[in-house]
Length: 367
Image (cartoon, rainbow, N blue to C red; front, top):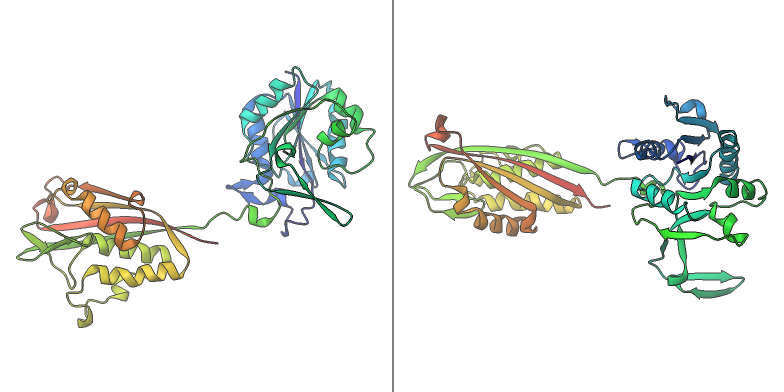
């Protein structure tokens, strides 16, 4: 198909409030405008891609299919500059896209170009999820949201039809569909994508901050002591030796949470040389650490646990341990994964003289 794509990336982004223009900010590990370029290239739909930039010298792209040109004062000016540039290439179809929408899919590109075979203008749109009001002078009117369209980009057009309308337009427009609607040209609306949101404010790209912590603990097994794992008693011939109850699962979880919170380690908070913590149950050690997590406005993403021992077999106690942990941590059981690992009879663990545990915790912070 003889088709081109114009990517508009020359806005001043006044509402974005950043030291650098919005299009150069990093989003999902890449400058915002790069997402549109990569998807366009991967789609293999376009003979020519034009990036309209406020500062072409800032763009470092080495691909013959891509041209970078200087944009205009307004969005509509930049769009027209892109169209004028493409005029010499004898383009049949053109898509116009705002770089501030990096989350569109290649499927949407294909749907748009497919519908251009029998239409002169194809626009992705969604119905509003919210109630809509419209103000004329001092009077407020309710709009039927089922009859209201939220238009998106990319928008697809027959190049000739769009070019003829664009060179005549004088008023500022926010999208090319406006040119067709205001001149009573037939427009084909197709379903847009919920993920194809426009980045307008800096909050739109402030991703949730995730933190991870690693915990590890190991204790010797001794006769005539109760074995505690994950906060519950486990029937076994020996228990874990330690200043506390020796619960390696809870100790490792506590240490992992402290690591994710960057709050040192369990030994700092519960030193073994302090008789205050002699024979303390591990749930009592975990509780104030969970309070720290909640006070800091954090929440769990998941907890992954490796219990390392020859016996007891983890599979026999997994469900009970997970239920106990979910209650102690006040989270859903589905966020906890418990695996049993052996060491093939090697070392103290292999001789059933010790049990170890390692844990990885992932937490995030509420806004």
